[in-house]
Length: 234
Image (cartoon, rainbow, N blue to C red; front, side, top):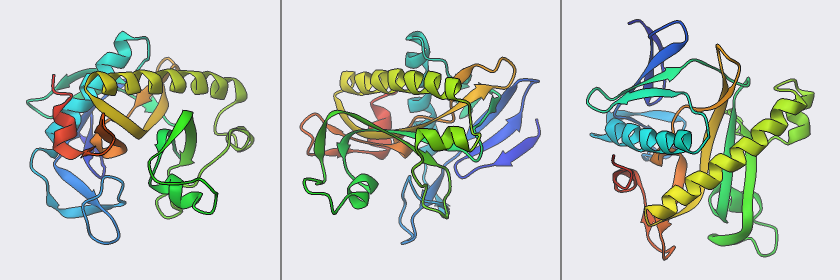
């Protein structure tokens, strides 16, 4: 199999006409301070033992749960022993979109709205807050509104409407699964694409500790990294 792309934390290999093999690695990202940070834009020089296994284990568990409940994903199969996942090839919405859901306000949300009265870390929302951001490390992953997505030709209005509904369903299921594991999910980001063969929408990339914040049900103790991934061990 030929290496097609070396990502920050995963490597992409050729596999079939409409499938790829993702190899999860122990590489981790770091922030501008040099600290290990799942949301960082730079790859650390050091490896974190067990990181790849933890991400794959959590991702495959969540993907299976979503598929069993009517949300399509790109996962075909996973192999924990080889830290690999066979996935359907996807066409992404250029230059790339990330779909964020927040049940509590924290991180960039509070920094963005710090001048708004009532905005405080850990605030609970009456209903989930959905955001879409452009994948742009240098630009700080800016927010984009629905009308701009259509106006810029990233997708048509009908596709966007379908994806908004599918994303809301997926986010609700993910939140419910975290709750079943005794976890209070504060926020999470996921990515969508279209099946390269059929054109159908599907959840792609990974859903792991790298892209979410979760606490115990008291909301006081953060659960992250391998401790979070262990909650989803098959």
